[in-house]
Structures are given as structure tokens and as C-alpha cells.
Length: 143
Image 1 (cartoon, helix red, strand yellow):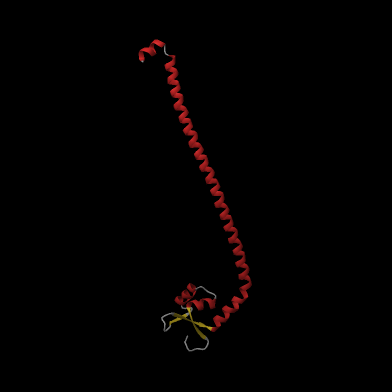
Image 2: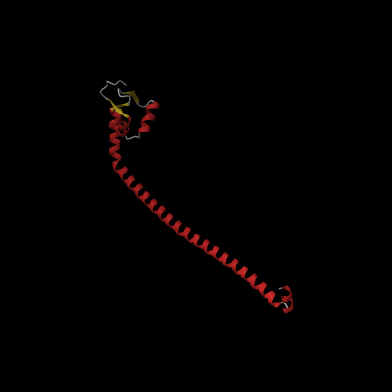
């Protein structure tokens, strides 16, 4: 392809990608594979040589798909909104369950502490009872 041909348009990669309905990376890949030709401009940027026929075909294809693309986009947005609301609900539920689990754990710790204190008190009472059951003269001798 020659730069002076009237059916060739020279565009920067980003503009060529937009005109062809591709991503910039897809344009770079097509350049590497030889499907599109590229040159360096005077400013050092890469310019893509795009035939007018490809631009026209891309614009016709883009105009045919505009309605379908809009519908697909709106469906995807609805699905994304639903997924985000489900995620937020799941996070809220998770926080509720985490709070309940923490409250249960604290209740269990309190109950264990109270149990240990009651056992300690029970042992003290049992020792006092054992001491009280001894004969008076043994208590007097032991001091």
C-alpha cells in the first residue's frame, strides 16, 4: 500500500481502532500479523494505513449493530446492578452473622468464667465444711 493512494487513510492507532470498531490492542495485533500496515509519523507516533473500504465496512457494520449493542449493554447493566445488590446483601448478612457469632463467643467465655469461679467457691466451701466437721478438740490442736 502506498501513502499517496486516495483510498488509503492514515490514522493514529487510537483513532483507527475507534473507526474500525476495535480496541487499540486489536489494531496493534493486526499490524503485527500483517493485516494492517503501519508507518512512523514525523512526530514519532505510529500511524495506521487503513483502506477506505475497511472504514466503510466497519461503519456499516457498526450502524447495523447499534440497537443490538444498546440492548446488550442495558441487559448487562441490569445484571451488573443485580449482582452488586446481591453482593451488598451478602456482605450485610455476613456482618450480621459475624456479630451474632462474636456475641455467642463472648457469652460462652462469660459462662466459663462464672463456672470456674463457682468451682473455686465450691472448693473453698467444701474445705470449710470439712474443717467444721472435725471434732472440736482436733480443731483446737491444729490451731
